[in-house]
Image (cartoon, rainbow, N blue to C red; front, side, top):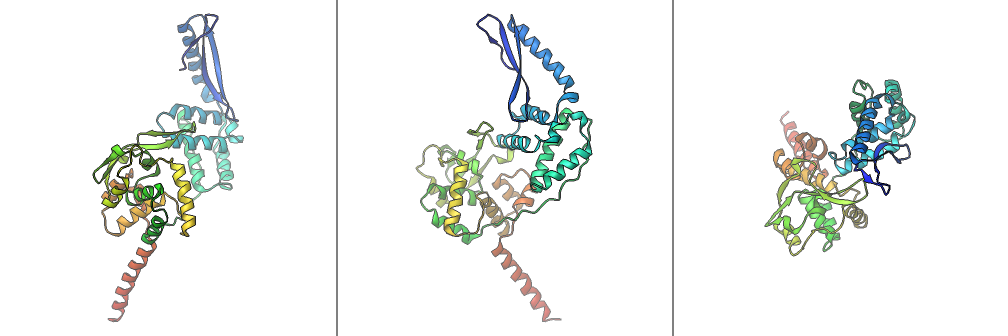
Length: 340
């Protein structure tokens, strides 16, 4: 609850969050009383009564807003920011204006169909996940029954060794070179790279124990990683550690977004196929898998939360390695054909 403030008149006032309208403006309920304890009691009684009536009277848009208010301290800033964007974009229409008690499976299915015509399956599923979590909190008796669009396999390009060599030659001597080395040979994430300081370097080991994230308030902050698995110590080749020597404070002074912007320009100027900075992690995991590194070690080195996540998203077969293995397979069968 908010903190009461004493007015010049001697009375106490407290303002309690009520709801966020469809334009994103927050509305508050104001209470005034002669004493601090009295005004707090008035606010608490109002909140208790409002909470009791919410399932019948609150609309979906405001329920999503209340869900985010309650969860913002336990969800990551990037998740909160993404959900707030989904709320503004996809819950401000006719479905968002419906009271929770008036929601039907048909209305939700129509909403899913309309979303599917405008955005990709991943965005639809993210919006549906936010809807589901909100209803679970404020309308638990409602059982969602909807058909979601089929998942699409993303068309991602995984760079190979030659791509990495060409890219590193292009950015040699720049701050971006260090960021690429940490991502491609780590593999560290953008936020982890930008949060590193000289205190995290111990011999050839880099300790990962924090990340730089963008908050819903528009600020870059350094905080603890989202998952326990993200805490790790990664041993790098000596030539990478040498690049970090002598740097005081933050190893990379840029923000994650600045790194991505510089990376896009480097890719364009070096004439490489388009891929993202995050795809350097794909490269690293794929190389480790191709040279026979056990999955458990890949999981530990990359800080992935589960073996399932790593296998589904990051076990990409690099084209050159794929061609090599295909040649080995076909040569074997070609030799076999001579015996038939």
